[in-house]
Length: 190
Length: 83
Image (cartoon, rainbow over all chains, first blue to last red; front, side, top):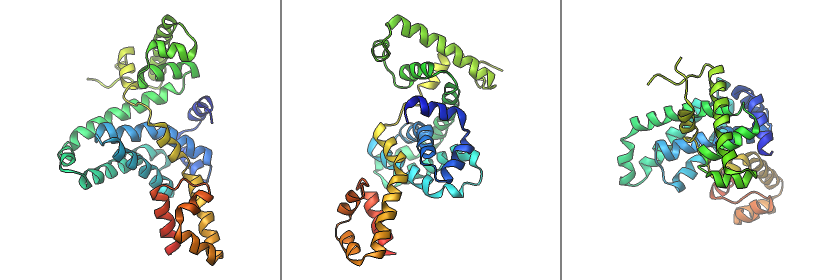
């Protein structure tokens, strides 16, 4: 599936619909489910629990292996995100407990981890809103903000002058903001 | 409702960088891996000589079934053949 098809499926299917399709044995839906939540699981492991990459990779694969294995046990299909978050949390903590003394110190920062997961939940909601924009907007915002690519790199990849990249980012952010407001996803009071 | 401004939105988007592609691909291929393992176990149940070869060299059996022979796949295969 190319990225545009993946984006289209992402917009079309709710989490619950996607889970139902996975449970029915639809491999393409499984690919989309992994795609939809891969950043989230990865970020919990490396940002919230600060696992080194090899440990994070093991946790990442284990989360999806268990999810695939136990998807039928999920009581509410719409609850796939918190279910994956909980699974990831548990496996990260297990990994920290099995690890070195250096990691055990990190284990004490569970409150920090929860704060980070809250922020990741918010980011996931914004990424979901992003999926409702055109493919061009999705790509340019993702490249700039999430992949940390420079104007020049994006310009080369999309065959655009750097100035155009900057103005498109700005326009797409405005569209994203409208999309968020349309979904009643205003920023939490701070 | 307090609205997001563009700067904040950019910052929030940046909190979820992509996972390494190889990790994502491996997780996406789980159903194929499962299918390959099922086929090996099914054949081993029907063919004692094949079962013996798989037990002796699970990596070769996995590669023959086009399943990447990661340690977890070898472990799952051993467990299933022990049942």
